Length: 129
Image (cartoon, rainbow, N blue to C red; front, side, top):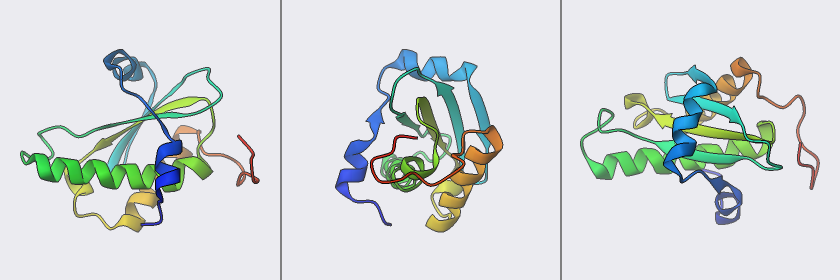
């Protein structure tokens, strides 16, 4: 994984239940490794949330591992490829546990592209979008 602590701390977190419920009205795309929900937030930055249900795995240890993998993928991909001013929720699936990290990164880019939230270009140093 290529994520460092600074990249992880730069992501603003969705924590309120109302924010997660509001995501149901946004865009949604399914891939093998995850489900991505997107909604505009009218803020100058992105916020991100993670959900892994007991349907994925009964073991809390394995669900936490899925969340850690999703956090790393989000830090690597969303910071450089996602449009600014949106809320993103990554939902873990059963395949997320064993799927290779590179494939999870491809899945997230593919979901962003299919929903129309992929940036047209790579951001320059200090560029917000």
